[in-house]
Image: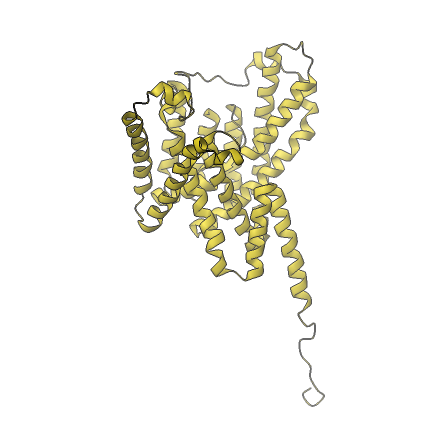
Length: 390
């Protein structure tokens, strides 16, 4: 969490777009989790728990620092603009896929399980359907009334309404928490420690750690692509250019600093940056306040988080996802040629059912093929002139 606060502060202060919000990201860190699981399996069962813990800590720090160095080098050598060669329909499909994952992720937060037929059971419907309606209502309100205070007012009002209903039904807090309606139980206090202490480094299993380097390499590659895609997608949302090379350098320094405090790999987040754009008009202050609150949570305690209903948090994610889907699926029908709209839908479908890399690759492949077909129809003859004309 301290690493996340450091990452957020550096990007918020130095990004070329003042509304940028950077967070530790799920895709690269999901890969990191798999690598860590593999490295733990490679160690004998009798291995000291301190040795296991130290190896994991240094693996996390090393991955974040190396990814930060790669960001830094790409930005310094002005290679960030390569993402601009991605076709517009593919970018649209990427944003639509992001919206889909946010929407389904919001529903998943409310029910605390993956999507499935169990969602249609009456007790499950009661958990996620009101949040889905609330998220759509947020979108309707924000799209028609442009006040930046509207979203936080709705969020706070929904929390109040949740507890008002619980009070009317005489449901105690303990029962709400035990029933999975709240975010969960958090420690009342927490303490951060520097991750690269000499005693930690002395306990690292270096052969196991170095043997995992090939498996860790895709994290940096995926992070670079995702950062550039997120920044490019954010340009489409805010309708302004972002200096990609500058932001690569900023993300590089941010990950270096975050890594040395124990943080995971992170970069610009479309959802939170667009939320900042909606709420504050792209100011830096919300990001700095968020970083301060994260830091205070670590040192003072996370007890207050226990009172946030999952329904309200899920509704906010539904709002963000629904906003992107409306713009890049519904509105795209009226803006794009039918073949380009089909590419958007195909990219969205591949992202939803397979993942971001497969979706981007599929959309890009089809776009390239269509370009070749269209270009082949252009006559190679520019002018046909007779001798008299000559």
